[in-house]
Image (cartoon, rainbow over all chains, first blue to last red; front, side, top):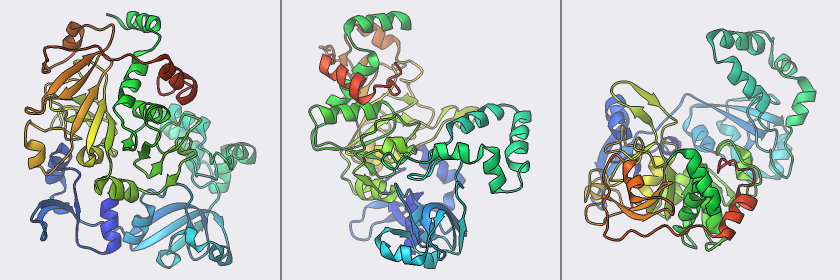
Amino acid sequence: MAFRYLAGALGIPFIPIRSLRGSDILERLHKTAPQDIAFVDDPFSGEKWLVLKPLHPDVAVVQVQVADEEGNAWIFGPRWDNEEQVRASARTIVITERLVSTEMIRRNPELTRIPGFRVSHVVHLPFSAHPTSVYQAYDYDADYIKEYAQMTQTREGVQAYLDKYVYGVKDHWEYLERVGGLERLSKLIADPVLGY
Amino acid sequence: MVEGERGQMQAQQGYTFFELMAVAGARELKDGEVVGVGIGLPVVASFLAKRTHAPNLTILFELGVVDPEPIHAGVGLADPRVWYRAKIMSSFVDALGTVLHRGVMDVGFLGGLEIDMYGNLNTTLLGDPNGAFRHFVGSGGANDLASSARRTIIIIRHEARKLKQAVSFITSPGYLRGAGQREAAGLAGGPSRVITDKAIFDFEPESKRMRLLSIHPGTTLEEVLAEMSFQPILPDHVPFTEPPTPEEVRLIREEIDPEGIYSGR
Protein backbone atom coordinates (compact mmCIF):
# COMPACT_ATOMS: atom_id res chain seq x y z
CA MET A 1 0.00 0.00 0.00
CA ALA A 2 2.80 2.42 0.93
CA PHE A 3 4.47 1.62 -2.41
CA ARG A 4 1.26 2.41 -4.30
CA TYR A 5 1.03 5.78 -2.52
CA LEU A 6 4.69 6.40 -3.34
CA ALA A 7 4.04 5.71 -7.03
CA GLY A 8 1.02 8.02 -6.86
CA ALA A 9 3.09 10.70 -5.17
CA LEU A 10 5.82 10.47 -7.81
CA GLY A 11 3.37 10.53 -10.71
CA ILE A 12 4.86 7.38 -12.24
CA PRO A 13 2.63 4.85 -14.05
CA PHE A 14 3.44 1.78 -11.94
CA ILE A 15 5.86 0.56 -9.31
CA PRO A 16 7.77 -2.75 -9.30
CA ILE A 17 7.68 -4.73 -6.05
CA ARG A 18 9.34 -7.94 -4.88
CA SER A 19 6.72 -8.68 -2.23
CA LEU A 20 3.59 -10.80 -2.89
CA ARG A 21 5.26 -13.15 -5.42
CA GLY A 22 4.44 -16.81 -4.87
CA SER A 23 1.89 -15.97 -2.15
CA ASP A 24 -1.84 -16.54 -1.97
CA ILE A 25 -2.23 -12.78 -1.43
CA LEU A 26 -1.18 -12.40 -5.07
CA GLU A 27 -3.54 -15.21 -6.13
CA ARG A 28 -6.37 -13.42 -4.39
CA LEU A 29 -5.47 -10.09 -6.05
CA HIS A 30 -5.59 -11.80 -9.46
CA LYS A 31 -9.25 -12.55 -8.70
CA THR A 32 -10.35 -9.47 -6.77
CA ALA A 33 -8.25 -6.65 -8.26
CA PRO A 34 -6.76 -7.77 -11.63
CA GLN A 35 -6.80 -4.15 -12.81
CA ASP A 36 -4.26 -3.17 -10.12
CA ILE A 37 -1.49 -5.69 -10.83
CA ALA A 38 0.58 -6.72 -13.84
CA PHE A 39 3.90 -8.30 -14.77
CA VAL A 40 6.44 -6.43 -16.92
CA ASP A 41 9.94 -7.18 -18.16
CA ASP A 42 12.70 -5.00 -16.72
CA PRO A 43 14.01 -3.23 -19.89
CA PHE A 44 17.56 -3.28 -18.49
CA SER A 45 17.96 -6.79 -17.11
CA GLY A 46 15.05 -8.61 -18.74
CA GLU A 47 13.91 -9.84 -15.33
CA LYS A 48 10.17 -10.26 -14.87
CA TRP A 49 8.70 -7.93 -12.23
CA LEU A 50 5.35 -7.69 -10.52
CA VAL A 51 4.12 -4.10 -10.78
CA LEU A 52 1.38 -2.30 -8.87
CA LYS A 53 -0.87 0.48 -10.06
CA PRO A 54 -0.42 3.83 -8.27
CA LEU A 55 -3.03 5.11 -5.84
CA HIS A 56 -4.48 8.60 -6.31
CA PRO A 57 -7.01 9.12 -3.52
CA ASP A 58 -9.51 11.97 -3.80
CA VAL A 59 -8.81 12.99 -0.22
CA ALA A 60 -6.11 12.22 2.35
CA VAL A 61 -6.87 12.83 6.03
CA VAL A 62 -3.85 13.09 8.32
CA GLN A 63 -3.56 13.72 12.04
CA VAL A 64 -0.57 15.85 13.09
CA GLN A 65 0.80 17.44 16.23
CA VAL A 66 1.54 20.91 14.82
CA ALA A 67 0.36 22.84 11.75
CA ASP A 68 -0.15 26.41 10.59
CA GLU A 69 -3.21 27.79 8.78
CA GLU A 70 -1.72 26.87 5.39
CA GLY A 71 -1.38 23.25 6.48
CA ASN A 72 2.41 23.13 6.77
CA ALA A 73 2.61 20.35 9.30
CA TRP A 74 5.10 18.79 11.68
CA ILE A 75 4.74 15.11 12.45
CA PHE A 76 6.60 13.79 15.49
CA GLY A 77 7.40 10.09 15.71
CA PRO A 78 6.99 7.61 12.86
CA ARG A 79 5.32 9.09 9.80
CA TRP A 80 3.74 5.80 8.58
CA ASP A 81 2.69 6.48 4.98
CA ASN A 82 1.27 9.95 5.65
CA GLU A 83 3.81 11.82 3.54
CA GLU A 84 3.26 9.67 0.44
CA GLN A 85 -0.51 9.58 1.01
CA VAL A 86 -0.78 13.38 1.02
CA ARG A 87 1.40 13.77 -2.05
CA ALA A 88 -0.59 11.11 -3.94
CA SER A 89 -3.99 12.63 -3.11
CA ALA A 90 -5.95 15.35 -4.92
CA ARG A 91 -6.92 17.07 -1.67
CA THR A 92 -5.73 16.82 1.92
CA ILE A 93 -7.39 17.52 5.24
CA VAL A 94 -4.92 18.12 8.07
CA ILE A 95 -6.26 17.66 11.61
CA THR A 96 -3.90 19.28 14.08
CA GLU A 97 -3.54 19.23 17.84
CA ARG A 98 -1.86 22.65 17.86
CA LEU A 99 -2.36 25.50 15.44
CA VAL A 100 0.72 27.72 15.23
CA SER A 101 1.71 30.77 13.20
CA THR A 102 3.59 30.42 9.92
CA GLU A 103 6.35 32.35 11.67
CA MET A 104 6.73 29.36 14.03
CA ILE A 105 6.89 26.94 11.08
CA ARG A 106 9.55 29.13 9.42
CA ARG A 107 11.80 28.72 12.47
CA ASN A 108 12.17 24.93 11.89
CA PRO A 109 11.19 24.33 8.26
CA GLU A 110 13.18 21.08 8.21
CA LEU A 111 10.50 19.62 10.49
CA THR A 112 7.74 20.26 7.92
CA ARG A 113 6.57 16.85 6.69
CA ILE A 114 3.33 17.91 5.00
CA PRO A 115 3.64 20.79 2.51
CA GLY A 116 1.00 23.47 3.04
CA PHE A 117 0.65 24.09 -0.68
CA ARG A 118 -0.78 20.55 -1.07
CA VAL A 119 -3.26 20.93 1.78
CA SER A 120 -6.86 21.93 1.10
CA HIS A 121 -8.28 22.08 4.63
CA VAL A 122 -6.87 22.52 8.15
CA VAL A 123 -8.90 21.48 11.18
CA HIS A 124 -7.68 22.61 14.59
CA LEU A 125 -9.13 20.19 17.14
CA PRO A 126 -7.30 19.30 20.36
CA PHE A 127 -7.69 15.69 21.56
CA SER A 128 -9.14 14.83 18.17
CA ALA A 129 -7.59 11.35 18.17
CA HIS A 130 -9.17 10.36 21.51
CA PRO A 131 -9.42 7.52 22.55
CA THR A 132 -6.27 6.67 20.56
CA SER A 133 -2.93 8.33 21.17
CA VAL A 134 -0.93 11.11 19.55
CA TYR A 135 2.80 10.70 20.12
CA GLN A 136 4.29 13.42 22.34
CA ALA A 137 0.78 14.84 22.92
CA TYR A 138 -1.33 12.33 24.84
CA ASP A 139 -1.61 8.61 25.57
CA TYR A 140 -4.45 6.34 24.50
CA ASP A 141 -7.37 6.16 26.92
CA ALA A 142 -7.17 2.52 28.04
CA ASP A 143 -10.23 2.74 30.33
CA TYR A 144 -12.37 4.18 27.54
CA ILE A 145 -11.17 1.52 25.08
CA LYS A 146 -12.06 -1.18 27.64
CA GLU A 147 -15.51 0.35 28.07
CA TYR A 148 -15.93 0.47 24.28
CA ALA A 149 -14.87 -3.18 23.96
CA GLN A 150 -17.31 -4.23 26.69
CA MET A 151 -20.25 -2.15 25.46
CA THR A 152 -19.93 -3.26 21.85
CA GLN A 153 -20.18 -7.00 22.64
CA THR A 154 -23.91 -6.90 21.78
CA ARG A 155 -26.04 -5.09 19.22
CA GLU A 156 -27.87 -3.25 22.02
CA GLY A 157 -24.53 -2.32 23.54
CA VAL A 158 -23.33 -0.79 20.25
CA GLN A 159 -26.50 1.32 20.19
CA ALA A 160 -25.97 2.35 23.82
CA TYR A 161 -22.38 3.30 23.04
CA LEU A 162 -23.39 5.38 20.03
CA ASP A 163 -26.16 7.09 22.03
CA LYS A 164 -23.76 7.95 24.82
CA TYR A 165 -20.72 9.15 22.89
CA VAL A 166 -21.79 9.92 19.31
CA TYR A 167 -25.47 10.89 19.00
CA GLY A 168 -25.77 12.01 22.62
CA VAL A 169 -23.26 14.86 22.31
CA LYS A 170 -23.68 18.01 20.26
CA ASP A 171 -20.01 18.47 19.30
CA HIS A 172 -16.40 17.49 20.01
CA TRP A 173 -16.24 19.66 23.15
CA GLU A 174 -19.29 18.00 24.66
CA TYR A 175 -17.77 14.62 23.74
CA LEU A 176 -14.62 15.54 25.68
CA GLU A 177 -16.78 16.54 28.67
CA ARG A 178 -18.66 13.22 28.40
CA VAL A 179 -15.42 11.20 28.54
CA GLY A 180 -14.38 13.02 31.72
CA GLY A 181 -13.38 16.52 30.71
CA LEU A 182 -10.15 18.23 31.61
CA GLU A 183 -9.68 16.11 34.74
CA ARG A 184 -9.58 12.89 32.70
CA LEU A 185 -7.75 14.32 29.69
CA SER A 186 -4.99 15.91 31.77
CA LYS A 187 -4.09 12.42 33.00
CA LEU A 188 -3.54 11.34 29.39
CA ILE A 189 -1.13 14.16 28.52
CA ALA A 190 2.17 12.66 27.40
CA ASP A 191 5.28 12.71 29.54
CA PRO A 192 7.78 14.72 27.44
CA VAL A 193 10.58 12.20 28.02
CA LEU A 194 8.51 9.09 27.33
CA GLY A 195 6.37 10.62 24.57
CA TYR A 196 3.27 8.79 25.87
CA MET B 1 2.37 -34.64 28.71
CA VAL B 2 -0.08 -32.03 29.95
CA GLU B 3 0.77 -28.33 30.16
CA GLY B 4 0.98 -28.30 33.95
CA GLU B 5 3.59 -31.06 33.97
CA ARG B 6 5.62 -29.24 31.34
CA GLY B 7 5.48 -26.10 33.45
CA GLN B 8 6.76 -27.94 36.54
CA MET B 9 9.55 -29.54 34.59
CA GLN B 10 10.55 -26.13 33.21
CA ALA B 11 10.71 -24.76 36.73
CA GLN B 12 13.13 -27.55 37.69
CA GLN B 13 15.27 -26.73 34.66
CA GLY B 14 15.44 -23.07 35.65
CA TYR B 15 13.85 -21.70 32.48
CA THR B 16 10.53 -21.77 30.66
CA PHE B 17 10.02 -23.07 27.12
CA PHE B 18 9.25 -19.49 26.12
CA GLU B 19 12.65 -18.41 27.39
CA LEU B 20 14.29 -21.34 25.61
CA MET B 21 12.66 -20.27 22.32
CA ALA B 22 13.76 -16.66 22.81
CA VAL B 23 17.33 -17.77 23.55
CA ALA B 24 17.38 -20.10 20.54
CA GLY B 25 16.16 -17.22 18.38
CA ALA B 26 18.76 -14.84 19.79
CA ARG B 27 21.57 -17.30 19.00
CA GLU B 28 20.57 -17.31 15.33
CA LEU B 29 21.34 -13.59 15.03
CA LYS B 30 24.89 -12.49 14.23
CA ASP B 31 26.59 -9.31 15.37
CA GLY B 32 26.26 -6.49 12.85
CA GLU B 33 23.15 -7.86 11.18
CA VAL B 34 19.94 -5.95 10.45
CA VAL B 35 16.85 -7.75 11.74
CA GLY B 36 13.22 -6.89 11.02
CA VAL B 37 10.88 -7.95 13.80
CA GLY B 38 7.21 -8.00 14.64
CA ILE B 39 5.81 -7.74 18.16
CA GLY B 40 6.21 -10.50 20.74
CA LEU B 41 8.83 -13.18 21.09
CA PRO B 42 11.05 -12.05 18.17
CA VAL B 43 11.44 -8.74 20.02
CA VAL B 44 12.66 -10.51 23.17
CA ALA B 45 15.05 -12.68 21.13
CA SER B 46 16.48 -9.65 19.29
CA PHE B 47 16.93 -7.57 22.44
CA LEU B 48 18.62 -10.56 24.10
CA ALA B 49 21.04 -10.98 21.18
CA LYS B 50 21.90 -7.28 21.32
CA ARG B 51 22.66 -7.49 25.05
CA THR B 52 24.83 -10.59 24.67
CA HIS B 53 26.84 -11.61 21.61
CA ALA B 54 25.49 -9.09 19.06
CA PRO B 55 25.83 -5.51 20.43
CA ASN B 56 25.96 -4.11 16.89
CA LEU B 57 22.67 -5.70 15.83
CA THR B 58 20.20 -3.26 14.24
CA ILE B 59 16.58 -3.97 15.23
CA LEU B 60 13.98 -2.51 12.90
CA PHE B 61 10.18 -2.36 13.08
CA GLU B 62 8.24 -2.06 9.83
CA LEU B 63 7.00 1.47 10.52
CA GLY B 64 10.58 2.72 10.56
CA VAL B 65 11.42 2.54 14.28
CA VAL B 66 15.06 1.52 14.74
CA ASP B 67 16.80 0.22 17.88
CA PRO B 68 14.26 1.29 20.50
CA GLU B 69 14.89 0.51 24.18
CA PRO B 70 11.39 0.27 25.64
CA ILE B 71 10.89 0.26 29.39
CA HIS B 72 7.15 -0.45 29.24
CA ALA B 73 5.52 -3.22 27.20
CA GLY B 74 3.25 -1.98 24.41
CA VAL B 75 -0.02 -3.42 23.11
CA GLY B 76 1.31 -3.41 19.53
CA LEU B 77 3.81 -1.74 17.23
CA ALA B 78 1.60 1.37 17.04
CA ASP B 79 1.99 1.90 20.80
CA PRO B 80 4.60 4.62 21.51
CA ARG B 81 5.80 2.52 24.47
CA VAL B 82 7.53 0.28 21.91
CA TRP B 83 9.33 3.25 20.27
CA TYR B 84 10.99 4.60 23.41
CA ARG B 85 14.62 5.68 22.96
CA ALA B 86 14.66 4.69 19.28
CA LYS B 87 17.57 5.98 17.18
CA ILE B 88 15.38 6.51 14.12
CA MET B 89 11.66 7.01 13.58
CA SER B 90 10.93 7.20 9.86
CA SER B 91 8.25 5.65 7.66
CA PHE B 92 6.97 2.52 5.91
CA VAL B 93 8.69 3.51 2.67
CA ASP B 94 11.96 4.01 4.53
CA ALA B 95 11.79 0.65 6.36
CA LEU B 96 9.98 -1.59 3.87
CA GLY B 97 11.41 0.23 0.83
CA THR B 98 14.92 1.53 1.39
CA VAL B 99 15.95 -1.22 3.82
CA LEU B 100 13.94 -4.35 3.04
CA HIS B 101 13.19 -3.91 -0.67
CA ARG B 102 16.68 -2.54 -1.22
CA GLY B 103 17.98 -5.90 0.00
CA VAL B 104 19.90 -4.93 3.13
CA MET B 105 17.66 -6.71 5.68
CA ASP B 106 19.63 -9.73 6.86
CA VAL B 107 16.89 -11.41 8.87
CA GLY B 108 13.11 -11.34 8.97
CA PHE B 109 11.88 -12.67 12.31
CA LEU B 110 8.29 -13.95 12.11
CA GLY B 111 5.56 -15.71 14.04
CA GLY B 112 2.54 -17.34 12.45
CA LEU B 113 -0.66 -19.37 12.65
CA GLU B 114 0.40 -22.30 10.44
CA ILE B 115 3.51 -23.47 8.62
CA ASP B 116 4.04 -26.35 6.17
CA MET B 117 7.06 -28.58 5.46
CA TYR B 118 8.46 -26.06 2.94
CA GLY B 119 8.28 -23.17 5.40
CA ASN B 120 5.29 -21.46 3.78
CA LEU B 121 3.67 -19.39 6.49
CA ASN B 122 0.03 -18.47 7.06
CA THR B 123 -0.86 -15.44 9.18
CA THR B 124 -4.07 -14.57 7.33
CA LEU B 125 -6.87 -17.07 7.86
CA LEU B 126 -7.77 -20.51 9.18
CA GLY B 127 -10.14 -22.79 7.28
CA ASP B 128 -10.95 -22.91 3.58
CA PRO B 129 -10.31 -19.59 1.80
CA ASN B 130 -13.11 -20.45 -0.66
CA GLY B 131 -15.48 -21.69 2.03
CA ALA B 132 -15.80 -21.10 5.75
CA PHE B 133 -12.80 -19.41 7.29
CA ARG B 134 -11.83 -17.22 10.19
CA HIS B 135 -9.86 -14.10 9.31
CA PHE B 136 -6.88 -12.88 11.34
CA VAL B 137 -4.88 -9.68 11.13
CA GLY B 138 -3.51 -10.53 7.69
CA SER B 139 0.01 -9.91 6.59
CA GLY B 140 1.26 -6.74 8.24
CA GLY B 141 4.83 -6.68 7.02
CA ALA B 142 5.25 -10.48 7.20
CA ASN B 143 4.94 -11.07 3.45
CA ASP B 144 7.42 -8.29 2.71
CA LEU B 145 9.92 -9.70 5.22
CA ALA B 146 9.57 -13.26 3.89
CA SER B 147 9.95 -12.01 0.30
CA SER B 148 12.96 -9.73 0.65
CA ALA B 149 14.94 -10.53 3.80
CA ARG B 150 18.11 -12.53 3.16
CA ARG B 151 16.76 -15.22 5.47
CA THR B 152 13.80 -15.66 7.77
CA ILE B 153 13.52 -17.21 11.21
CA ILE B 154 10.08 -18.42 12.26
CA ILE B 155 8.87 -18.99 15.81
CA ILE B 156 5.67 -21.01 16.18
CA ARG B 157 4.00 -23.20 18.81
CA HIS B 158 4.57 -26.92 18.38
CA GLU B 159 1.07 -28.26 17.65
CA ALA B 160 -0.22 -30.55 14.89
CA ARG B 161 -2.78 -27.91 13.90
CA LYS B 162 0.05 -25.41 13.35
CA LEU B 163 2.70 -27.66 11.74
CA LYS B 164 0.58 -28.63 8.74
CA GLN B 165 0.85 -30.80 5.64
CA ALA B 166 -0.55 -27.81 3.72
CA VAL B 167 -1.39 -24.35 5.05
CA SER B 168 -4.81 -22.81 4.41
CA PHE B 169 -3.29 -19.68 2.88
CA ILE B 170 0.28 -18.76 1.92
CA THR B 171 0.71 -15.29 3.41
CA SER B 172 4.49 -15.43 3.41
CA PRO B 173 6.26 -17.66 0.90
CA GLY B 174 8.79 -20.20 2.12
CA TYR B 175 10.16 -22.59 -0.49
CA LEU B 176 6.63 -22.89 -2.02
CA ARG B 177 6.36 -26.50 -3.28
CA GLY B 178 10.03 -27.40 -3.07
CA ALA B 179 13.43 -27.05 -4.72
CA GLY B 180 13.78 -24.27 -7.29
CA GLN B 181 10.27 -22.88 -6.80
CA ARG B 182 11.28 -19.85 -4.78
CA GLU B 183 13.87 -18.85 -7.37
CA ALA B 184 11.32 -19.39 -10.16
CA ALA B 185 8.98 -16.94 -8.41
CA GLY B 186 11.78 -14.36 -8.43
CA LEU B 187 12.58 -14.59 -4.72
CA ALA B 188 15.95 -15.01 -3.03
CA GLY B 189 16.49 -15.83 0.64
CA GLY B 190 14.00 -18.08 2.38
CA PRO B 191 13.37 -19.59 5.80
CA SER B 192 16.48 -20.77 7.61
CA ARG B 193 15.11 -21.88 10.98
CA VAL B 194 11.81 -22.84 12.56
CA ILE B 195 11.87 -22.65 16.34
CA THR B 196 9.07 -24.32 18.33
CA ASP B 197 8.60 -25.09 22.01
CA LYS B 198 9.77 -28.67 21.37
CA ALA B 199 12.49 -28.45 18.73
CA ILE B 200 14.46 -26.46 16.16
CA PHE B 201 14.30 -27.23 12.43
CA ASP B 202 16.28 -26.13 9.39
CA PHE B 203 15.65 -26.90 5.71
CA GLU B 204 17.47 -29.65 3.82
CA PRO B 205 19.38 -27.79 1.05
CA GLU B 206 18.39 -30.10 -1.86
CA SER B 207 14.70 -30.76 -1.25
CA LYS B 208 14.01 -27.58 0.79
CA ARG B 209 12.02 -29.74 3.20
CA MET B 210 11.97 -29.09 6.93
CA ARG B 211 14.65 -31.07 8.79
CA LEU B 212 14.95 -31.69 12.51
CA LEU B 213 18.02 -29.89 13.82
CA SER B 214 17.73 -30.29 17.60
CA ILE B 215 15.25 -31.35 20.28
CA HIS B 216 14.76 -29.28 23.42
CA PRO B 217 15.99 -30.87 26.67
CA GLY B 218 13.19 -32.78 28.41
CA THR B 219 11.41 -33.57 25.13
CA THR B 220 11.50 -36.85 23.18
CA LEU B 221 11.55 -37.47 19.43
CA GLU B 222 8.17 -39.20 19.76
CA GLU B 223 6.69 -36.07 21.36
CA VAL B 224 8.11 -33.91 18.57
CA LEU B 225 6.67 -36.10 15.80
CA ALA B 226 3.32 -36.71 17.51
CA GLU B 227 2.46 -33.02 17.28
CA MET B 228 3.29 -32.57 13.59
CA SER B 229 0.97 -33.14 10.61
CA PHE B 230 3.91 -33.97 8.36
CA GLN B 231 7.11 -35.96 8.72
CA PRO B 232 10.24 -33.80 8.86
CA ILE B 233 13.53 -35.12 7.51
CA LEU B 234 15.27 -36.97 10.36
CA PRO B 235 19.08 -36.97 10.35
CA ASP B 236 20.90 -39.94 11.92
CA HIS B 237 22.00 -37.87 14.85
CA VAL B 238 19.77 -35.24 16.50
CA PRO B 239 21.34 -33.36 19.40
CA PHE B 240 19.54 -31.63 22.25
CA THR B 241 19.13 -27.86 21.97
CA GLU B 242 21.73 -26.01 24.04
CA PRO B 243 19.75 -24.80 27.09
CA PRO B 244 19.70 -21.12 28.12
CA THR B 245 22.43 -19.99 30.48
CA PRO B 246 21.41 -18.53 33.87
CA GLU B 247 22.63 -15.12 32.63
CA GLU B 248 20.38 -15.28 29.52
CA VAL B 249 17.40 -16.18 31.71
CA ARG B 250 18.24 -13.35 34.10
CA LEU B 251 18.46 -10.81 31.25
CA ILE B 252 15.02 -11.82 29.97
CA ARG B 253 13.38 -11.80 33.39
CA GLU B 254 15.04 -8.75 34.93
CA GLU B 255 15.89 -6.44 32.03
CA ILE B 256 14.12 -7.30 28.77
CA ASP B 257 10.69 -8.44 29.94
CA PRO B 258 10.40 -7.72 33.68
CA GLU B 259 6.62 -7.34 33.43
CA GLY B 260 6.31 -10.75 31.75
CA ILE B 261 4.21 -9.24 28.97
CA TYR B 262 5.99 -10.97 26.10
CA SER B 263 6.79 -14.16 27.93
CA GLY B 264 3.38 -14.58 29.58
CA ARG B 265 4.71 -15.33 33.06
